[in-house]
Length: 294
Image 1 (cartoon, one colour):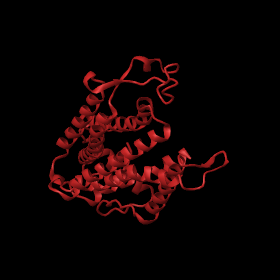
Image 2: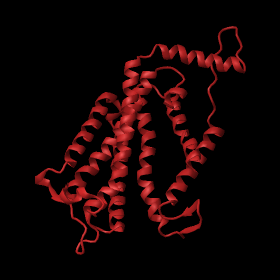
Image 3: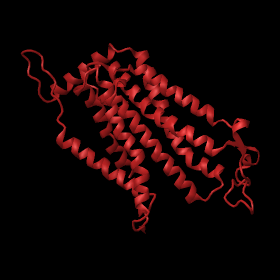
Image 4: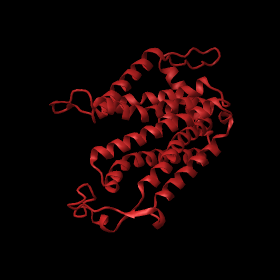
């Protein structure tokens, strides 16, 4: 399953490499905004599919094919990735390289010519700037993946609510984040923000992220002690397994969520849009298939 999904998700890199071919530098940011708008839809679609799956039959007859409210989104995503790969393979034609004057390129010659052209153009790139952008892309991906991964267990620890209640709150929060992200993307497609340079957009994203982490620190004026599991609080944090619960504080949830949700909703798409725009422009007028997969 993981192999098939990883293979199929490569279709996203194909789209990233196609955008420079069909857009100009002036509208490159708007073009990548549309792509990231599609990605932000997944933030809404995921909880929606999971919610809808709760009304579908739960099948656990086969160990490797279990259809539950948690696995329905995974299988749906896998199926959509495979479909997108098929569409790309069938409908998106590869542009042909321009042969040298008086020389016909066929077979291996065409491939060698393309590789040589990419190599020559790569040697002219600003290696330091390219490395910094790649590093920031890695940091950005890890940053948002880590946040999404820890939100649910974090909320379970501090809310002192049942797992179903926590899941409902997290799902609703994720839905709102998705809506805000799509609105942010729409602003870069439909408003004068499409003409703003990518570097200030990246700084805005980093500023949102910095404040998000700063606000998540348990400052005394905004925080309460974590509720420890007991007979009166069966859904509290189990200090027998997590010793730090006994002395740890957390930001009051209803102070924390209304601030974190819009910050996260704006930081994520603006980070991806700006980094992909800068990266694409740094690569310049080359076949970006290889480098967009980096």
